[in-house]
Image 1 (cartoon, one colour):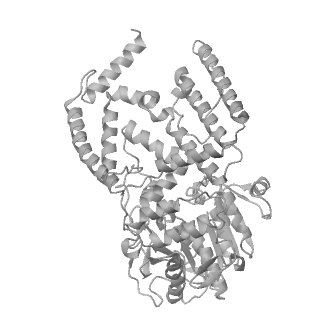
Image 2: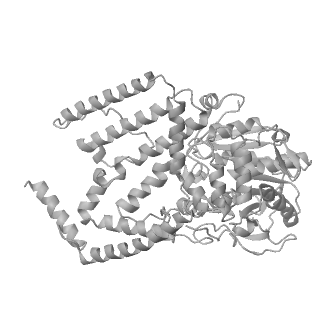
Image 3: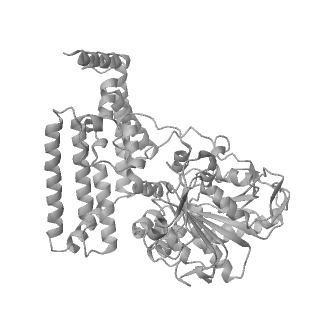
Length: 606
C-alpha cells in the first residue's frame, strides 16, 4: 500500500473511531439511533397509509396527471420521426466522443476542454472532484449530455397543444434533474468522502433528519430548509419599530415609527402578497426595505395579512380588496389626516393593487397618487396552466389552501436550488440546514381561503380576464386597467422564476399613465431585497417601452447599485412636500399592539 493510501486509510480509521465506529462494525450509538429510527418509521408508515386511504395527501406532481400528459404528448406528436432521429444521432455521437476522451484522458496528465459544462448558475457540480477526477468528470458530462438530449427532444416537438407542450417540458426537466448523479450516494464524491470520513454516520444522521421531517409533516415529507429556531419575529427579524393601528378579519395595519424629523406629506402604503408574509420586506435591519423607506422620510404603513383558517374560507378576492387596501386607505386618513397616499404592491399584492386602482378609477376615487409594482403579473398569458380542479379538490375539505402546497409548487420552479440541494445536504450528508433569514421566511408559509384562491386561479391564471376591459367585476363594478392613469413604476427581476419579467413587462401596456420599467438583477426575492449598502446587484433601464421585451433589454442601460436608489428618487417626486413626522397614535387611531403584530405570528402547518 502506498504512503498516500496508507495515510488516507489511517485518517479514515481515526475519524471512524472518533465517531464511535470501527471499520466493519457499528457503534452502540449508531445501533441505538437505527433502532429509534425504525420504531418511528413504523408509526409514520401507518400515518401515511391512513392519509392516502382518506385522500388527505396532496402531491405537487400527480402521477396520474404525469401519465395523462405523456399520453397526450405521444398522441399529438408529429408522425415525422426525422427531428427525433437527428437528436438521437447527435446524442449518440456526443456519447461516443466523450468515451473516446475519457479513454485517453484517464492515462494523460493533460486535461482537455470539457465537451459540455454545467450552466453558470448550476451549483450541483462545484466540488473539485467533478472536474479533477476523470471518472466523476465523465459521469458529470454524460449526465449533462443526457439532460440536454431529453429536454431538447421534447422542446423541439412541433404541432403540439401549447399547454401540453409546456407541461411536458416541465415534467421532463423535473425527471432529468431528479436523476442527477449528485442525488445518489455512490455517484456524489462529496457524499462518498463524508461517508468514508464518518464511518457512515452521515447516512444515519440523514435518515434521522428524514424521519423528523416526515413527523413534522404528519406523514408528508416537509423538508427543512433552514434552522426553524434561529429567528424570532420582532427580535432578530421584522423588528423595525411600529404599532398595529387598525385591524379586521383579514389584516392588521402597521404604522412604523418615524426615523426623521420631517417626512413626506403623502404616506406610503405597502401591500405585500398574502401567499407569503410581509416581513420579507423587513428582515434584518441591514436588508429591510421597510426600514430603508422609513429612513428616507416616508410615513410607512404595511398590511400584515391574516393566516386564514376554516373560519375565513368564504373570503373572496373582493373581500381582500375591500378589507385590504381600501380599508387601509380609510385607516391611514384617520391616523394621519391625509387622504392621498403612494402605494406599493409586491407580487400578488401588486395584482391586488392594480385591481384596486382600476376599481377606484371606475369610482372616481383618486386617493392613490402614484403606484409601484414589484414583480407583478397583470397579463397572465405566458405563466402556464394551473391545475385548478385538483387544487380545488384539495381545498374542499379544509376550506383553505395549505401554505406548504403553494410553497412546494414554487420550489418546483427552482428544484435544484430549493429541493435537491437540501435533499443532498439533509439526507445524504446528514447535516442540519443553516440559519438564513430569507429561507426562514420562505418556510413560514401562509394559507389561502378556498374562495379567494379559486377565484384568482380561474379568473386570472386560466382565463386571463384582468387584462380584458370589463373582464373582472369587483363589488358590482366592472374594472378596466386602461383607466389607471396615474404614474406607475414597474420593478421586475431578470431571473424571476415566479413572475417572469417578460410577462410582467406586458403589464406596462395595460395602464394609461406614465410608466417607468426597471429590471433588477437576480430573482423574485433576492432581486427585490437588494439594499444599496450591499453593492451586490445592478439594474437596467430603458424609457422605450413600446417594443418587445428582448429588444427592450438589448437597448437598456445597465447601472451599478441598487434599484432602491432609483425608485427612491422616483417616489420622492410624489411626496408632495414635507411635514413634521407623525408617530403611531398621534391621529385618531389608538395603537393596538407593537409591530409586527399577532397576525404574522400565526404559523401554518409545516
